Length: 398
Ligand code: NDP
Image (cartoon, rainbow, N blue to C red; front, top):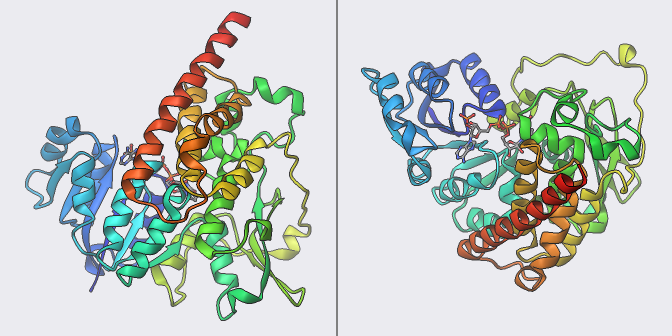
């Protein structure tokens, strides 16, 4: 019987993973080692009971008493806190879903790789902040990383049976997010509610805002570089509002392999769960005659400065990805809190990268976890300072 763990089980990707596991037989078909969550303790306990997990872990130590109470009599162990989440990754499992949001997903992912697990990686922030480290851990321990991001799963599938050396370019598709048709000058006034109205995908709140700003696509561009090892100039982004082509690979003979499907994350999660096989998945089938038209347009970098910043990060390499991701997380928190504007997020990130120029831009691909964590911390401090300045400016102007 295959064993598995889900980190970030209570989130959008986590719930969809649980859905697929339930459909595949749940506790009768899989030995569930660990399920982790953040604040949603009631849901975490419910899943852990249903899937008969060995241990359920919540992120906040203050949640432990409630988790214990909800699991009383179930035989599921309860634990809490970041170290307990990392320790849960030390319970060897054949398959591990990494679906915590943000930089908090990095350490459990690394710990799972050290046990030689197949790591289904939704947490793109891990590759952006510490791609070379993650790849080195996987290689050293005979572990395998499978992409879960729909774009990277699409690329991975379009590469099956092909030689990466024959790849000329990778074309990432982007929906353009909730604000793609807004006039450029109106974007500065966009609210959280505006940015959350995603046209195609139902996702967690943070990634939906990142989709509107294309910080999500910027992370994915860097993720593509780290995952597939292609040069930055081989990576293109195209807006494809229908979100039916999930990404494409262009080969040196001019052929382009595209991956199509309904916008449903259970496709790429299911592909990673069943890999290398394909099994039936409960996703809608495309009726191309009904779809009739697929449209594309080039992204405007004035509207999406995050894409330009991603190129700068790739040019710098080293710890630039860690600084970029941390600054982006702070800027997003501040936007969600109503302290800075939608377009201010990019300016906060850009200013942070400039402020940390000496600390991050050494061009090295060798990194230690401590260095990643120290730059992450530094970038959060600098980004918070910058966001305070922007927030004061807005308050003064208002
Ligand atoms: P959600 O916000 O829906 O869920 C995040 C999960 O992480 C929840 O289980 C949450 O717990 C938990 N969590 C939050 N903070 C912490 C923390 N500090 N420590 C431990 N656990 C924490 O996110 P998504 O499911 O949308 O995204 C997860 C990852 O997958 C992200 O990296 C995202 O970029 C990526 N991804 C998501 C896609 C999607 O369609 N949603 C598509 C492709 C990639 P709780 O909810 O209990 O607080």
